Length: 125
Image 1 (cartoon, rainbow, N blue to C red):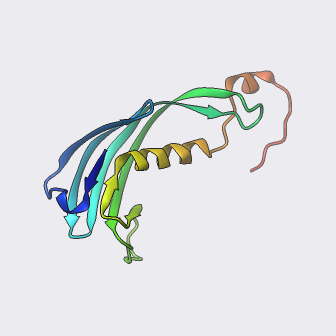
Image 2 (image 1 turned 45 degrees about the vertical axis):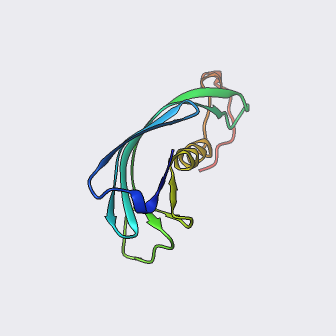
């Protein structure tokens, strides 16, 4: 789902969209001329590769998402919120979901088979 930045309402609007087998559900609204606030949850299942044996295992995702979307470069260095910058004036929620999924998949993950294996293996901290 895509929406033009200039068409985002100032009152919270419902957001429900799916990407693969993951759904984002919540609200979004314009906070200023160049900022949109998104409060949502990311739910579903996705395949993630075991860092030890490379087998793919389905995991459940249930994460709270709270961030701002900026139309252009965001310059407030004191802001502690997560800010996603868009340059073309279009908010692409599918791209946001895909980015969140890639972030989850890049984490270190050990599948149930390897956890139950009991064999020693090197682990980085």
